[in-house]
Amino acid sequence: MPASARRRWPQPGSAASDTTPRCCPGIAAVEWTIREGDPIAGGSIYHLADRMDAGAIAAQDWVFVKKGETARELWERALAPLGQRLLGDVIDYAKTHKTLPAKAQDEQFATKAPNLSGGH
Image 1 (cartoon, rainbow, N blue to C red):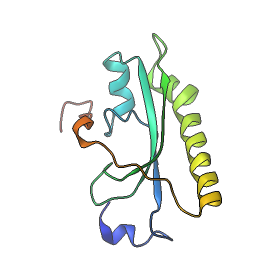
Image 2 (cartoon, rainbow, N blue to C red):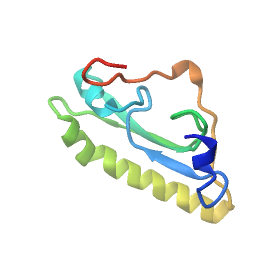
Image 3 (cartoon, one colour):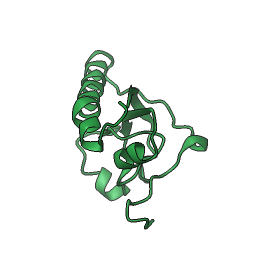
Image 4 (cartoon, one colour):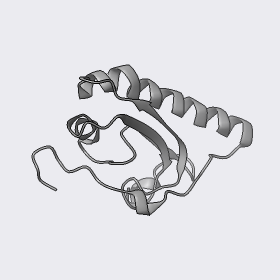
């Protein structure tokens, strides 16, 4: 997110939610998780940064993908609830510690899911 847009957030260190697989962020990450047959998917709450999905991680966890599950089923069963729980965890941490947790992302593991149409 550009710095000009981040300045509109109410306080420094604002976090964003992304309940898509951390291994492959992108516009169709959940769909690619299903398409590739990945056995796990995950989600993160991360700090906003100048580059997409580049901020420090405030919270992160993963779930198993059921055999034969669709992207929508995975989202409804596991990823949406995971995102809600992670966001609650970050809010509780911030209330207690008066700051947001932050762990730098390891760029060597970053990949990006292409659009389903094959475009990039």
